[in-house]
Length: 149
Image (cartoon, rainbow, N blue to C red):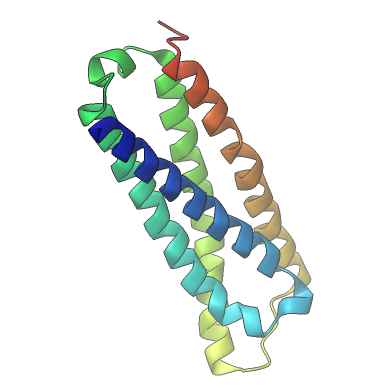
């Protein structure tokens, strides 16, 4: 039963994470500014917190799940999945910094709209994250079936 609860919590956290990433990606458009400039920073906090819950539930599955750490830790597919998760996390630093700057600018000037080039860079980064995140369940499926062992 514990394994099922941990899996359900992990999947729910992943869905929440993807939801907030999608919200951010949609809102990074010139036509949504200036209203979205301040809100993006709040959504980004939710994105970060959901990523921490994904990590925590994943670690709980690793150590307390049915297969256990002995099954996953020697598997290179597991390490590829964790590495990809870290890469996505590192890629999210740039949009986070921009969202914080936009929030400050929007508080100082209610009509603030980020430069088109700035919006483009952030959107491109978010789109790359969206595309990379698709690989995580693929790696997880292979890993769960013992690929790489």
